[in-house]
Structures are given as C-alpha cells and as structure tokens.
Image: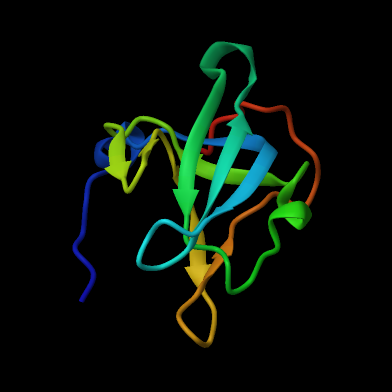
Length: 113
C-alpha cells in the first residue's frame, strides 16, 4: 500500500518545467545515460542532470523538449557529473523511463501544482 502523506509534504518537493538545451550520451557509466542541460528560466537558471534515457530517446530528439524535474534535491554525484536536478518519468513496459512533458508549451520555471 502507498504511504499516506500530508499535503505539506508534497509542497516541499519543487517540481518545475524546463527546456532541454543540450543532450549528450555519457558512456562512462555502467548503464549509459544522457547528460542534459535544462533551462529553467531566469530565476532558477540552467541545470544539469544525468538521466538513464538511452533506451527510449536519442539525444538530438531531446533538444528543445520540455521536461519536468525536481529542482530542490541536494546535487548528487553520478559518475563524472554532478547532477543538479532529477528529471521525472514513468516506466514503460520494459521498466525504462519515459519523461513527463507538458502537452502544450509553458514558460520555463513554471511550478507544478
């Protein structure tokens, strides 16, 4: 069963939308990932993330795509990269991530509510 939390717990997680401005495969990890640079607008700026998306995405196809990410986790060292945000997704039938993206353009930095 899923743990029940208070709404205040949800409010602590800062989920924002940003636009991918660069994406390149990182083959230096046990499981290849894509290093993303994501523009979250003037207030938050450009952040990096290492995302294991290589099964469902080509790096070039991610450029200019809007993604959802948690922007207030402590940065985490992933191989040779300090990942600053956690890009969000759901597992496909093979357990591989499919990114969450708005179905219309929204301004970078917009907060999920």
